[in-house]
Amino acid sequence: KNEVEQSPQNLTAQEGEFITINCSYSVGISALHWLQQHPGGGIVSLFMLSSGKKKHGRLIATINIQEKHSSLHITASHPRDSAVYICAVGRGSQGNLIFGKGTKLSVKP
Amino acid sequence: DTGVSQDPRHKITKRGQNVTFRCDPISEHNRLYWYRQTLGQGPEFLTYFQNEAQLEKSRLLSDRFSAERPKGSFSTLEIQRTEQGDSAMYLCASSTRLARRTDTQYFGPGTRLTVL
Image (tube, rainbow over all chains, first blue to last red; front, side):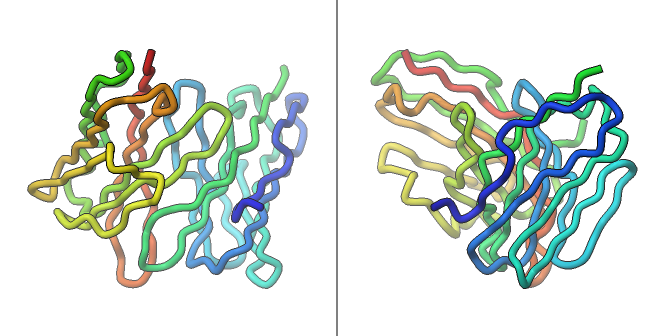
């Protein structure tokens, strides 16, 4: 079993829909990261959080430390949100991240 | 552009050849990471440096792989005697370590390696 699990693996939505991507982890963490990867490989960090909730524009990330679970929400989805969304966890002083396999999101106009 | 840069962006080589990749991190970042990503998978950790010291290596990093960061700035990743299984995207990231916490990692565009 992977230390970081994401669901769903693939997600197709219509423009305007509310989207939720889930991440569960089985190890102790210092922080959880949500990343976005577009075709061609470039990875952009969206959020780093260790508790509670963060919001940037239409993106919202939440984390429940007790349940070892995080969600990434996209409100009013748009075709430009189409990308792979990756959950990753950091484990304190080690610094390196452990990644989930990613969720491929496709938003249709 | 002051982001993380990687060179080359693409590399095609024949099995058995040696290849070397370079990563230039954001200038004030003291931590540098190498990851490998195969198709349809999330990235996997290979190794990381704090300044010039290599602090951790994954067991994925066989003895054919070596990484250096000689002056605590740019880093190189060399793969000797490449195998077809080495075909992947090699990603570099950098960050600033804040005491006892991980900081946001900034990723480069990656080097896509194809071993024929």
